[in-house]
Image (cartoon, rainbow, N blue to C red; front, top):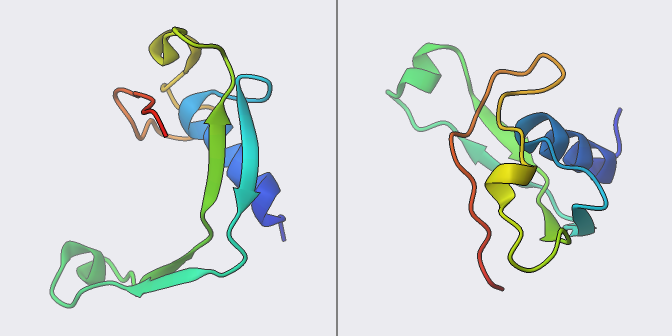
Length: 92
């Protein structure tokens, strides 16, 4: 399988069109987070049981004042369907 850091970088590219040096991976949490789909939801009716997730943190490196909407490609890359309509970076 794909290493968690590599998977996170691929997902950021596929869903937002961003790669280094515009963003930089700070790190990935060592523990995985799991959840079960709540009973009676459309997800359960579609056969989903839950998900295991690994969380990663990326830092915006494109420069102060850079407009992420001009840097990001939210159209879905590598054959992925678009998942976001807008993006906004927040101070941390």
